[in-house]
Each structure stands twice: as structure tokens, then as C-alpha cells.
Image (cartoon, rainbow, N blue to C red; front, side):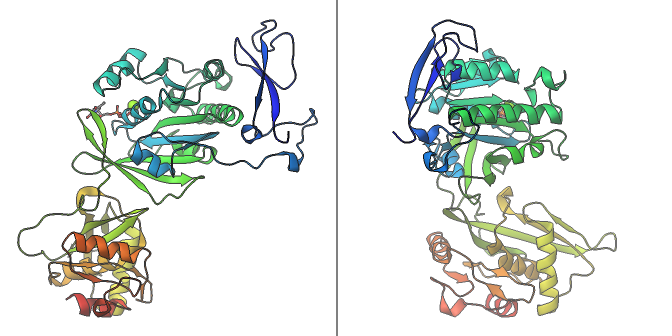
Length: 442
Ligand code: TYD
Ligand code: MG
């Protein structure tokens, strides 16, 4: 039928050909080819009659076939699981928990699908010991101490793997690319080779890659454009680990995954709304504003803390790790222009409690209120949260999911929400520009 193609697979080594041959071109075995008929949807790039082209109508439109890993926070960030035929890169600083995460994912997958774990950073014995510590020592994961990419690819074909975990990309090498692993050419070549395997076989490649704090030499940045999905693991306070997508061909990059690193590995944290909230006795100090932010499908409250002090060097500077410094400067400029508060001689420090990096635009108005509060010494009343985007003209712009944010704030005991107009807004606390916001809050 249409889109159903047969191919012949060597029972000895897994080599595939489109026409039957008596001797396997892969391993030289005789009469080892058996026919396999599969639906066309996984036959991306199928060639018709060796002419090098396919007829468009004969190519069955490719749907995404997902493999749900069962690690909910991981699946969430992926957009519903691993997509067959794709490559996922998991980056992060050394010691952050990448190996732990991918091993837990591999263990969870095993049984349902065939998982090969290619260990390069550690011996298979060390991986097994870690698995035992994580309570998944019995998982049916195939461990391989293989770092040469051609051999690994042959192994994946031979084992008919569905998923391969490579820990790490930096340890992979091909003799075709010189002797030293870890060079940019090696990374690119190896990532490309494995991507080819994934696309041809409908497999999934999970590549672990380290980044260093000081920018990256031969790191994942060089291969980000070659892979389908790029996830980074970041640390926050209280042993929290945030999994964040920076690229995803098969989903949004809004979602974050939250885990806690414990003695038994990473534990999923599904309920996040109050995770980054600071419990306070008594009043709110100046410079502190709570904001309901939305990351993907979840809303949670974060505490923004600002501090302004006379500039040490005479030139004012911004020190902000959790919010983009450029955003802090811009919001301060908007306040100067439209509210008249001066930051010219000041150093600005901004932090988000709990160490969470906040990227969404709804944090701009609360940030403005925190800066204003810090500069004037006027505290924000307790039980009040602020949300909104800020334009250069000082206008407060609508944010998505306002209703959800308001609901989350109320659930956590914050009765008043200063916000732009929108579904769910409190009409008494709707503000249209930053001046109105200052009047409403202080
Ligand atoms: P790891 O996954 O090895 O990090 P990466 O692969 O990103 O370098 O995790 C490193 C740290 O995590 C290590 O310092 C010990 C800690 N850890 C735990 O706290 N609990 C655990 O169950 C495991 C396996 C590791
Ligand atoms: Mg590791």
C-alpha cells in the first residue's frame, strides 16, 4: 500500500538495505537478510527506485511519534515526551545533575523501549553503582563503554536501540576527526553521526554536554543548531534543579521542569506555586515585591528584591543574576523618565529569592515597583502582588494568563493584584501606566 515500504535488515548486525541481497554489506554474513515491512511514517528520506528522489504524494506526512519517559517534569519540558527521530541535548555545569537525570530517565524508559547508555565519563561499574544508589539498579538498561562514534552507531543498529543516552558528548570521538576528543570538529561530527542514526532508525539521542561557568570552549553552543531540542539544567536554592528548554522543534520553550536533588537522586517537584516565596513575619521590607509569574502551564509567586546604593565607581552599574541586567536598566530608565525617580548615581542590585532566573515579561512592572521601593524606602503593603509588562513609553501592557496568576496569588493569601486590564483583573487595581502603578501600590 501507499507509504508502506519494505526493507531488509541483517539479523546479524542490523544493517539495512532496500533490496534483498544474499550477502550482508555490513558484516558479510550470508542469507542473514530478513524483510521488514513498516508503516511509511517512520521512513523519512525513503528513496524510490534508487533515483535519489521521492514522489511527494508517496511520502506519508510524518507525525510526531512520542516516547513518554514517565519522568513528568522532563516530559513537560520536552512538550510531552521524546520525539522519535530526534536529538535532545542536555547541558549544564559539571556536578549539576545531568548524569543523574539521564540515568533516571533511562531507567524509567527501560522495559518499554530499548535503551542503551553509552558511558564515557564513568566506567559502566560506576554507572551501575549510581543506578543502585538511585534505586534503579535493576532497570533493563544496556550499558556500553563506547566512545567511538562509528562503533557506537554500529552497536545501536545491532541492538536495535530506541533510545541512546550519551554521557557525554565531549567524550565521543571519531578517528576521522583527529585523535583528540572534545574539539569542535569532533563534537559536530559525532552529533551529526548520531542524528543520522536517529533519523534513519526513528531513534532518540540524548546527549549530555557540559558547559563551564566562564563561557564555553567546544561546548554545546557549537552543536545547538544541529540538534532538535536543547535543555539546560540550572541550580536554584534548597537543592532545586531547574530544567529549561532553550530550543525545541517539537514544543514551546516556556515550560520549566523543577526537581529537588536528594540523597536518592532527582525528585520531581510538581507543585511549584509557593516554592520561591519567602515566608515573612511582620512587614515587607523596602525593595521587596511579590510577582505572580507564569512559566508554561504553571503559575507561581516569586519575590523580587532590589537594592540601590550610591555608585562606588561614580558610574552606576547593574548587578542582577536572575533577571537580565539589560531589562533592569531599561525598567530603571522608564521609572526615571515617567515617574521622576533618579537612579543616575546609583548601583542597582536585583535578585529573585530562591535563585530562580525569571525571563518572562510580566516581571517588568513588579521589578519597577521593587526599584522604586528600594530607592524611596517606601515599602509595598503586605498581601499585594504586582504583574505587568512595561513599554518604554511607561505604559503597562497586558500579560497572558492573568486569571491564572490572580488565582495563584489568592490561593497563597495575596488578596490584591495590581495588574494591567485583562480577564480576571481587579477593576480597582487595574493600572495603565507606571505612574498609576506607583499611585496604586504606595
Ligand atoms: P551528576 O549527575 O554526576 O552531575 P553532572 O553529570 O551534571 O556532572 O550529579 C553530581 C552531584 O549530585 C554530585 O555532587 C552528587 C549529587 N548527587 C546527589 O546529591 N544525590 C544523588 O542521588 C546523586 C546520584 C548525586
Ligand atoms: Mg556527569
